[in-house]
Image (cartoon, rainbow, N blue to C red; front, side, top):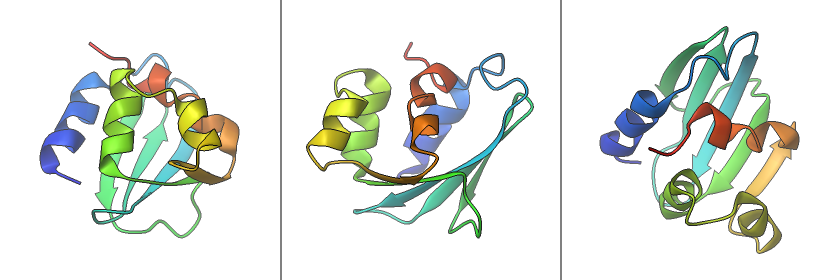
Length: 103
């Protein structure tokens, strides 16, 4: 995943939506290195690699993530069509658009 996409996530992060959260979102990209986001009490920490105990794991392409984040791709549709695979607390994935609202 390009640093640019990660910087955009950091810039779009909504601390209010993350208040009282303590979750780890693991991203396994089909076309880039794995990354995980630690969302805790209104803060965001982006790390490269694998977290040993993520709250939810998402497997998708960087293009699918960009589409979901921009609103061009419906996350539920991506899940139903197999473009997005999720394990763990799948309901957390639905909060990504609140944590990272589009401009």
